[in-house]
Image (tube, rainbow, N blue to C red):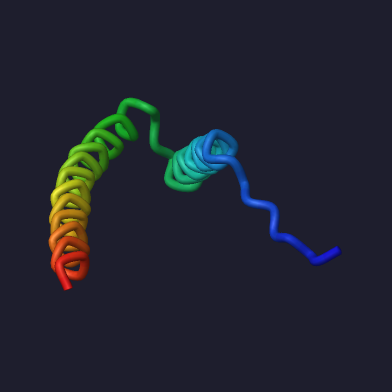
Length: 78
């Protein structure tokens, strides 16, 4: 039997990422002596950046999808 790479389910990957983020936040808090009051300010700014990047990612994905559709249609006409 061939060695088949087992792909991590998205739900597991999301949960793992969440746990890693929590660990990183706790580590940063302890290392820098920051209370969660200050961490909230930092995380709030990061959240805004994530929302902006998510929107840009969606725009780029839609653009690529439309380009691929158009390319596929042109190839079908040949």
